[in-house]
Image 1 (spheres, rainbow, N blue to C red):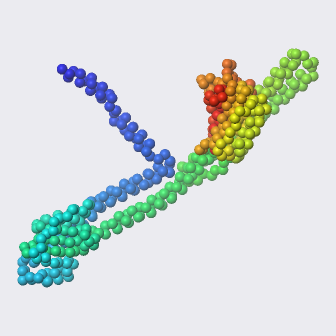
Image 2 (cartoon, helix red, strand yellow):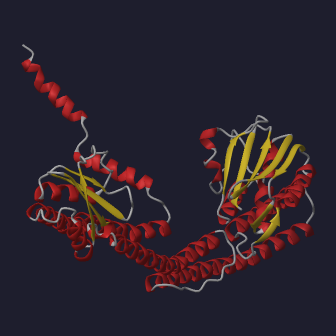
Image 3 (tube, one colour):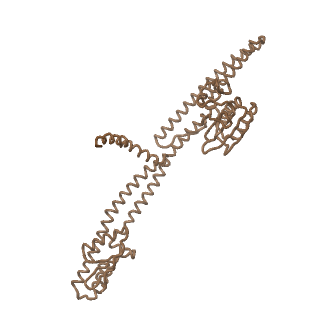
Length: 463
């Protein structure tokens, strides 16, 4: 009765089961998570893994084939000698004390032979773990002699003892272990592992020399992105040198573009400032009426906006990065905030305060944020702390804050919020300049809710 429902249930189960492609992707992702992320470590795996795999296959083949085969052949030869001694002892009974047989066994076969009359075969002890000799010798004794026997391959490390039942007692044969066992096979393994270690050491040394230019190129690119002065000469393999020359050419183009922009802006700045100065002189020579005073304020506002525009477009790229004491810089920032009329309720600097930045540019970044906080709040808190690979500066205020949905919008140039806050310059560029400077150092500026109830501006730069 339930048969018609099996079709839909099976279809649902099949849909729930992941396909081979999804399983393969999950497996590849899991393996990727386990593998190291660095180029040097991955290159070592690429070199070491095939060598280890090859050695494992060779060692297994050698142990499984050669070593067992040689041990079996040697054990077969020793067993044949034992079988011959038993046959001689039984066929020629005139040698009652087996003195002649013992002498022949010692001189010709390198075996010690004793006849233990009236003795019995000892009970068989536990079989040793992973004993190729014990297994091979037992098999040969069963095949060639076919009598009750007892062997000891572990009692004395360099000797083996074989006892075989004979009609009047037990024949005891003692042989050197090397006669039945390929005891020198470990030399092959030692040579193989030793030579592999030497070759791997040489490979690792060469690999490190090949990785160094790549790491150097990455460090130089990171330093250039942080606005630091760099000296770089391409080295290494041909492909790495090509990447290095391409980076140098890109750096030259960027610097040339920035230099051209700065030169153009300096020319524009000079021309516009000349015109504004003429306006001011003309307004100063006429009668100071209400209309003229309004025009003077407009000219001042125009001059202030022009300086903001030029500062945002020009930036501070010409300044050289240097090690800067953040504690002293934040002390100056606290003084500036107090001069703006705000009260500094908290000041704290934790960790190592020495950071490589462009001092004037970074000071301007922090001042823009602090001036914004002082404009819209009565209380400001400043804190700085060193983290693992960065330095964090937080500026809090108790002002009206900025809505969460508008916090990224205010970083755009010329954006001014009507119902919340505006940047300190009044031109919509203060926060844009601050973020531009922070990003030029390889960091960023972000806005969050402040414990004081207003806005928290956080600046993070690499240490």
